[in-house]
Image 1: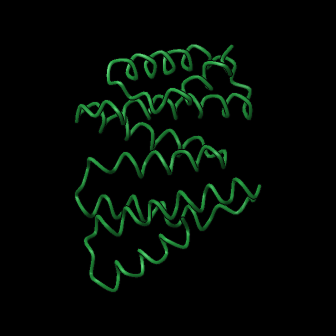
Image 2: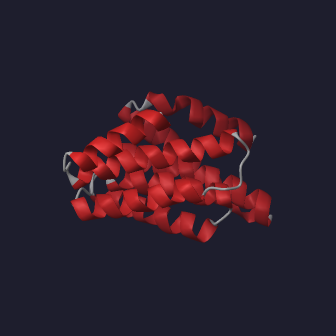
Length: 166
């Protein structure tokens, strides 16, 4: 993925691609770098964060609000992995606002799932047992949205979160 996206980014710049194309390629590259760092148990997430920041800025510049939640969710996920919960919640709140205003149910589902994952890690790191009710609310919302929308590609993620909550 990294090699392919690197090639695609180079071609995008060489061919004066749209801001959206460049931003989406940066998003893919940032997510792939994050996954690589996680798989290698690295603590150096700077390259991934660089591309995710560029992706979010590019999506804003392109004026493509329907794609912005993708970048914000990816960046929130990386913030979560790094233990930067304040920034994770800032990005998640923006996803929620955009998704609710735009009636973007799939992005709203992804918001609730990422909120659950963030609460789990935050609880482990900061010992916030009082967050269980908030976790349960996000989990229930995600479950309802998956059923309402037929977004069953998220079933495995939901099941994993349900298993962890038991």
